[in-house]
Length: 567
Image (cartoon, rainbow, N blue to C red; front, top):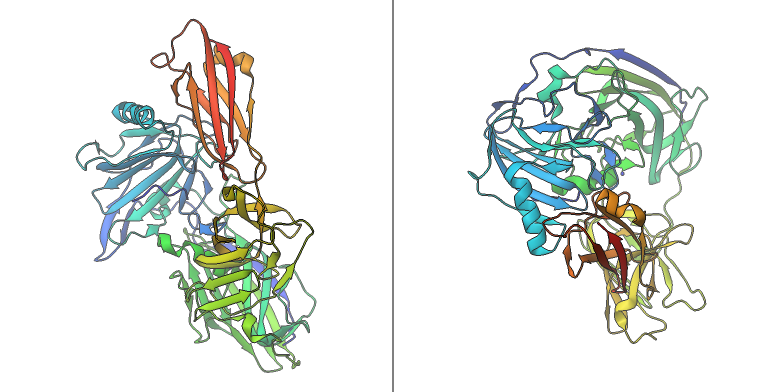
């Protein structure tokens, strides 16, 4: 297990009913039957204080599902994290993405990944620090032998924290089923410790007329509606529905993902999503299932996400082909069985539907390899990269002085399931050092962000994961290094620097103190500060010292600065 630095005109009226089908404290839930061949597993909680979550399994995140549970730690770091059962530590990591990470393989058929820790304990802590100095790197990884670090249920294995890409103190706990490698919802193992009487609540509905096949409110574009809408809406043809909804729990203001969504039309189930497990490789399918924070109640043809189930023979799409009411009912449930319903009526109205107008070369099909060749642009999108057909709104523009044309592949972002190769030709190849060119993504407001890429015979070659807007830019400006509160370094025993780069971002850094390697790290990637905790084993106390920091950006531009302090 690797440490992963881990979208007819109708009469529409809504009624929202929230009730608790079960709720309260679930009983006998720490033992769960799951997995191939059905086995029983039981776990103790990771903490000895009441369980409260800041995030649950499967929440919608950018390009991925939230893979586990986020346990609140009362706004504090350093809470003892306990082993959930008997097993052994299988991997130890320090990364910029997940901070301090500890993987544990349990004897009951599951493993866990504990992320954003503040510290390891015992021999592991010493071993990690020694390796960081040996490799002269904050980021390290250790794979122990199975018998090297055995653990018993309840044993303290680490301390909770706020390291890596973390917005506050918490423990992120992923649970993996060993037999399949699937990420599974850990909540069923802790239900008896969780209080929840609140059902999920819907906040909006969305309708998707299918391109060239459906219409909503007289237009062939998607439309969003509030849950309490009462005015009539018309639709005709083939449409898909979606819902924006969140779960809630007793005593906290957090919003969570919804475990189960069922859509019925005229009393027949047409779609169901059950967020209980997924494989790591399925993560990007979230871009097909969701539209922003809306969950689609239909399956695009290239979406293989196993948690989605359509039962109407039409991928969950609904054919509005009669001038009559169509009665839609959403049922939303959380993992403890609290349930709410959203009801709305769709009145079909016969309306003309226009076919999609397009040029054949800009029609990308989900079930084939697609090629786009234009002056100065080459793009290959292999089969399996698109979730549905796309009719590209392609355009190209030239801004005076630009290195390359700006190519709009499509007027809105279309996520791809994997990276696809693209080449952009240079209009003005004037740099001797070709490494300073980079492919830039262009935002709707004209801002640029680095995609990377390499120079090759007058072209920039890059792999993209979205059909969007791209150009080529130049970065010759080195990063900036800013000391933070240098007058306090000696008193606190902590050196803190801020490294900033406006274009391609910080790629690497290396610090020394008095000419010897110093263990600078990025404990929290949200702040991005480079921090060194002074250690008398490596820095002699009682004198004046010199810090030298070298920072390199994504195009190899480098800055070195010296600072002095007394400790």
